[in-house]
Amino acid sequence: MSTTPHTVRTTDYHTAGEPFRIVDEDLPPIPGDTVAERRATALATGGSGTDPRPGPLDDLRRLLSREPRGHAGMYGGFVVPPDDDGAHFGVLFWHKDGYSTACGHGTMALGAWAVDTGRVPAPDDGDVPVRIDVPSGRVTATVHRADGRTTGVTFRNVPTRVVARAVKVGTTFGTVDAGLADSGALYVSVAARDLGLDVSVRTLPELARAGREIRAALPGRDVYGVILHEELPDTHEGLHQRNVTVFADGQIDRSPCGSGTSARLALLGDDGRLAAGDTLRHESVVGTVFTGRLLPAGITEVGGTSHRTGTHAFVLDPDDDLGAGFLL
Image 1: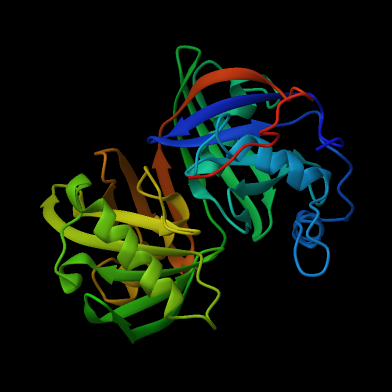
Image 2 (image 1 turned 90 degrees about the horizontal axis):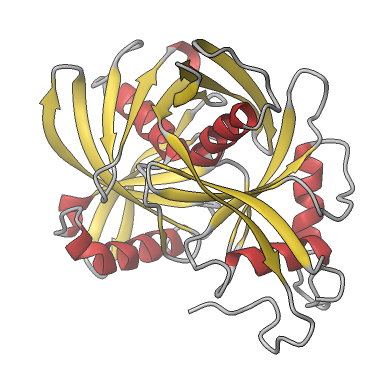
């Protein structure tokens, strides 16, 4: 850990309950001309194969995502230069297991952070777009303002496409049909009732196990997240669903999952249940809500709220035997 700064400053947000830790200083050099190339660099220096020693960037990721400074469900982003002048900045998304290609809730948090800190000028009232280069492409977080404060964020994702339908997946809960959609990362959708489960805090251990099993049953698909969803009574705005998204190695998204909501919108559109302009009220297991809207040509918009939870100066004591920390 000698290459990691002894003090690392972060600004933390939550989007609909899911944490996002932002680092825009104290970063080591990350070779690459684009965000996608920088992610490839981060993956290549993450410590694996014949050289298990992580590079300085991965040291930092581990430090911030592991206990006692983080936890297994921690998410964050390293702010990096954009691909070109068309975006305000770029970001490398990270979690405890590595670097993801997309993160909707993180995009929303970054939009709020960019405006709240003055990095992107914004009016007291009205909307301002924050353009962000992520590994899967360029996305826009439109930050909504009223009376000098941020009231919400809507992000427009990269185009989402349906990859496969009615894929048979075997689990210890039985064989289920899965739908796959790529919304910057590949998500698998399964109805929770087909597993004999409902989407609730009570069933989280079983939902997490089912998510791990489904992901493991599709080894050649490069699945990022598994969305286990259930129907709720329609609202006056339209469809209403609740979900738990299981990502990485069985981690639970506390929010309704931003990129996962894009995947659900694409599948519901393919089912004929949503048309362009229609909305989905998408609820999380903790009761927070995203509003998703299907647009033409595979474009989706997802809206919700992001709030700052703190600013931190994390310290790495050179005499601390735990070093970067641990995971349970």
